[in-house]
Length: 216
Image 1 (spheres, rainbow, N blue to C red):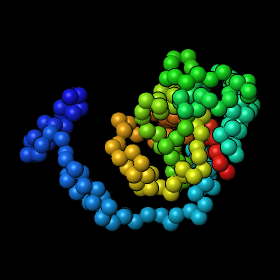
Image 2: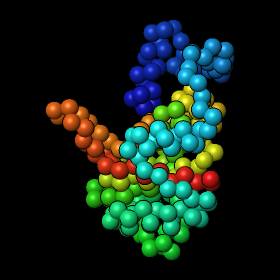
Image 3: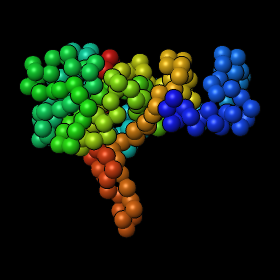
């Protein structure tokens, strides 16, 4: 039993519950969530893709488009060259076979380390209402790839853009069932205004977030 499991088991014991929730208890929770009336929300945009782009640009993200995954290496290479950025990168394992070498890039599928300047990831989904990327942790979706490098390039499928946070959580529960260890929301480059209320990019993470929309 992990430390986390031990802590949760002790909390459940104090509530008079068994150490691990059973199917009945999980079913009750799912039924409660499904029956819960939604809170008031702003009117939804007619075009989720256009809304996502608008919100993300306002957060200092940048954009490219790729018709298919096969077009991604060329789009990424063009972005890096336009901005005089390194042509070496790390990526999630699922993206290693995209043919980066044909675009003049050297890409390794591993966790990012100190000194890696460009990280290429996917995204579980994207949220139109806020221009946000939703990332889930896992052995094939390494969090360091989006957090450590100065430049984060995210490949976002157009059909994975949802209206808002509510739909993002619904999709996560429906597809993953059990929540991952970490869920990260990325809304543009890292920033802070702690020092003299002057906004500084790259304070706690990437200086740049570049989004490649795939499948338009």
